[in-house]
Amino acid sequence: MENDFDTIEKMSNPNNDNFGISDVFTLGRIIQIPVDAVINANIDASKAAFNFIKTFGFEDEKDPNDPNKLGKPKMLTFSYKYNNAGIEQKMVVNIPVLSLVTMPFLNISKAKFDIGINILNKVTKSSSKPETLVLLGPTEDGKGYKKNRESNNESPYSNEFSTNMQASIEVESTDLPSGILQMINLFKDATNGTNEDIYALSTVEDKVEFSLDPKHKNISIEVTFTKNKKPVKNGLVIANVVSDTDSDLHDSFSKPIKVINNFGSQVGNASLGQAKALTNEDGKVKFKFSTHKMKVLNTIHNGFIYFNTPKASKIAVYYSINPKKLKKIKKSNS
Image 1 (cartoon, one colour):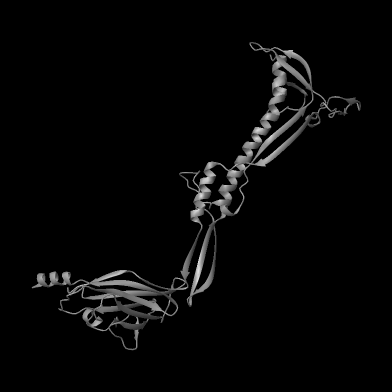
Image 2: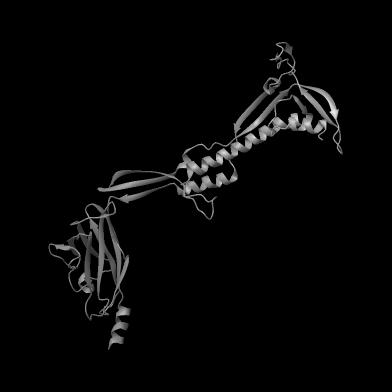
């Protein structure tokens, strides 16, 4: 058998299906209701901000093993072309989307509730101290009076909760959480611009070493010519040998530069220091460089082999011929 306190407690509980059919509350409940509303509103605002970051700032890449794992950051990418010393180039810029928008971190900074109540009586629940009961009434300034729907008489009480309370809410932006600040700092590093040649040359090697060993006295270097990362057929590629030492190229190389069959077509006559070729269908050309067969050098020969084309920036491959290594190889072969 429920006592009066149990009945009033249920009727004044917002989670009860019959909430609102009575204006009688315990004093603690009437204070708790607006406070809970403010707390829950701040919690909901934080959840909304977090969901905004997940959906707006990251790709939807669900991980069945970790449902809380975020995908890759969404990036805003744009590019523009420009001319650099006669060579057409492209600048590609990547910016994290979240670094371009204001994140909606809000909270209720101030809440004021004016509640009109009339204290009725105290009800004692078994094994607990007496509870004060209150009845909703007009606020201090008299607002809250409303015609009773049944009698059409003026009444200081109402069956509608809103007429017995005045609320003043102030919402403001909050300081960003420390984790968000760290993420923004990482976004600064993720924002970048990359130069890309519309036309580009590339090689696998960036350094080659010649020797008198038959396996290493002839070295081939493959060059790939592309436009927007796609092969360029019949593109002109020029190879130039530039020595860093005082020795003549005749002391370093025994034959003119040669273009290997099926890896490009030679254009004009080649020399020890230069050769021109057109790329094959795969956008490739292979140049062959040959040292002397048994000549022992007294000094180190080194330099750069430059590959260039009128439409792209040149690239360089370092070459070296070391006489000490040549003598060791010759001695071991004798």
